[in-house]
Image (cartoon, rainbow, N blue to C red; front, top):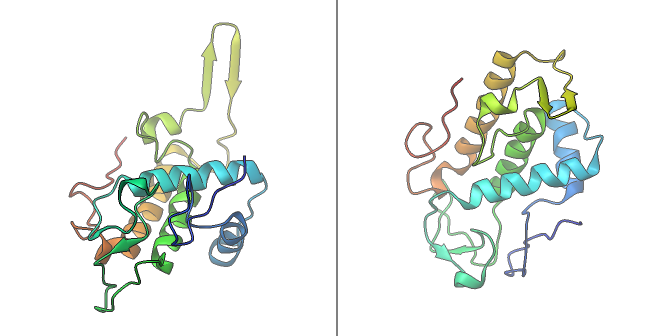
Length: 178
């Protein structure tokens, strides 16, 4: 299913702030990475969108309860005190979503409200007669945890001035442990 992009107008059923093309370009430009599976990139972008919408944002939704996501918002300023237009999605919000999506794609389950980073690092699962083993050769469990934590922290730094708690890790936001 194609992403439905929130462009600041209160798009019905929106499930992402960033487009797939923006995400693929961001990953290539900032991490030298590639997003080989387009459907997987959409899943990661949706997970990041949902996770972000669970944060405590300053201001109010521009379109009230009819709005799918947290943005666009009214009565919000950027980190330098400039007002954010009520029909805008700040670049920091889009970048943070892409950071979070990259963390989720590198370590699936990082943003899952029903799982944990430990669950995301499982290398083998067996249910009844079906057994699946995942390729973990490229990153150890501790490396994956550290990498996911760094990406989430980077996203929170981008969002800090838009969040009621300032986006500080450990104060009502994401803290990972194994």
